[in-house]
Length: 110
Image (cartoon, rainbow, N blue to C red; front, side):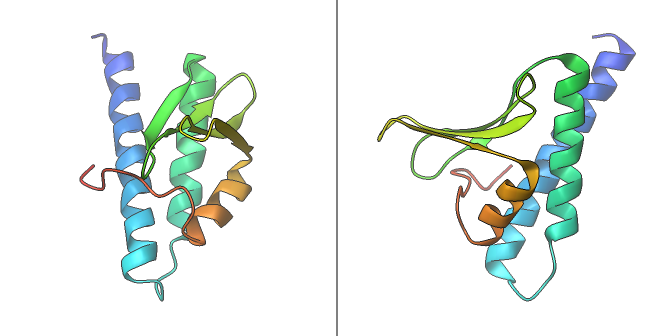
């Protein structure tokens, strides 16, 4: 993998890990502020998606589905196949939903 692609992959992995940590922290320690961490990680993921022109899977949803960043729409997208629902969210809408406990990650060991 060329150095630039390697750096992008590492940055994306770090942003995803920071996102998962912030979501977990918002549930386990709701008195601590995590808005900034959520904002920063989602902004970084969106920037990488725009630069690489690729959709990015953020994580699997609990109990089923996936959370994506769709670069063409510049939106976050919750795909819930079991009930057949797709929800498109802006960055701010996703942060608010995460802080309220919606769209929880399935696997929190990231």
